[in-house]
Image (cartoon, rainbow, N blue to C red; front, top):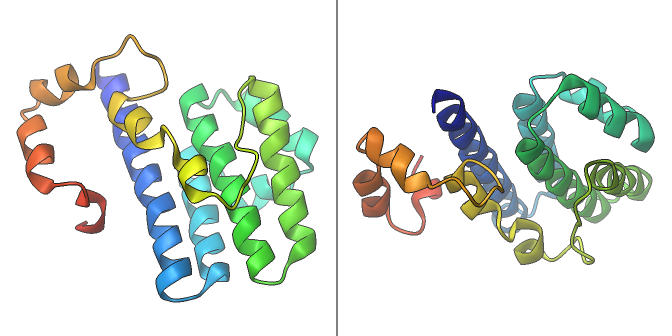
Length: 169
């Protein structure tokens, strides 16, 4: 139960970072800062040095993530974040690094057996299912997030925050 709650918190924070990076890109017109935010989130979520992890080749990054035992649910967030970062880097004018990030994301998805959106610039497609997965503590359907939240009396608190709760933190 506590491990699931920790995972749920970690995924919620990751989702918040993804959404915040999109806001920075749009509002501040700063895709490089948005990319840097995602790299920081990836480092935090994997509990690894994000710069070192992201300096690996696509095949190597997938293997390192596999052997470090990062929760598979976190891996989906990581791959989607790296794919989104590739878009931001391209918009910032760093096409070469953008291509590397896209290849890294696809290598991770292939290693772990999940699909990534066809259009990496489609923010809705990138984040599809992430909020629900974060609230559920993962992508598995047998976990009821309401049970964990109710155990801590948090469900009413989250409901009262509204749809833009992640912006208020």
